[in-house]
Amino acid sequence: MSASESLLCDLIITGRRGWVLNYIFTGKVQGTFNPSSFWGILVIHLLALMAPFTFTWAGVFAFMLMVFITAPLGTTMGFHRLLAHGSFETSKPLRYFLTFCGCLALQDGPIQWVATHRLHHKETEQTNDPHSPAQSFLWAHLVWNFYKHPLLKDLESLRQYAPELCRDPVFHFFNRYYAVIYAILAVLVLGGGSLFGGWKLGLSLFVWGFALRTVYTWHTTWLVNSVCHLWGYQTYQVPNNSRNNWWVALLTFGEGWHNNHHAQPRSARMGLVWYELDMTYWLINLLHHLGLVKKVMSPHLSVFKSGST
Ligand SMILES: [Zn+2]
Ligand SMILES: [Zn+2]
Image (cartoon, rainbow, N blue to C red; front, side, top):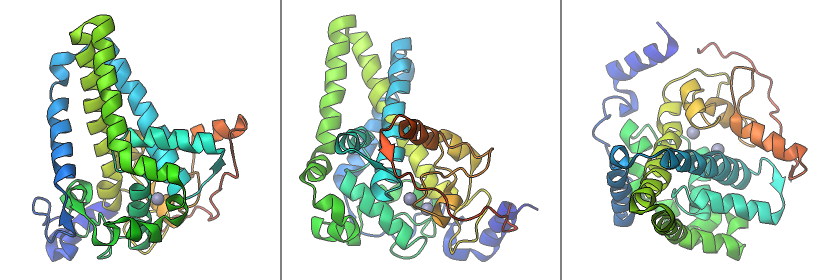
């Protein structure tokens, strides 16, 4: 029996922290209900259902381009490795550009995102973890987005977790208007596409480049919070259940090496051996060779097997 199977049996038999038994029911919710998040996520999922009826190859290209801009560039390299962990340094314009790309992922503004993520690292799988799988799988994957966490509910509380970002008015602007920026760009793509290629092209670019792409990048990012704390192998013995999961890593451009990441969060590199593909690190490395980023943090722990595979 593999470690993940034995872990599952353990969970089912003992109901340890309800990870499996609470698959459907989210257990105790944390925070106050945030209707705008709930309705926003619901509406974009409904719009994404139009994808089969609005297919064009231009739409597929828009999907891939926007995934590249918002996932490896914006969320993974920008919000996560640069802003949340300071894994490397850039010029201010590049820092703001990556932040802009991250805003288009529609996963909170940069200050909120970074504060939420730092709280996850600080309180991993404990009561104050914003998306703890100990609450339930569904909570960690999706439902936590519908609630404002009591420790992250206003600017004063965010300041505790992201003080350096709170000192910069540009980050305040992005934090406040990220959804407006997203909406303006989506409407421009819809209008521009309609103007140059008719309403069918405009609608296709809008549905594939914005709605479907957003749903894809949401769920792949959320898999790191849910699946990567349950299934996969552990290279490092850390005081939590974080896991390295190859298929999540493929879908998230390297973020699925989550056990490696919890062991050494400041490292710009998450895939540590040849088969742990880390496309975001390749990008960071490329920009480093081009002289656009500097002080790239390296992993400091040696790789060893903890016995859990
Ligand atoms: Zn984690
Ligand atoms: Zn992190």
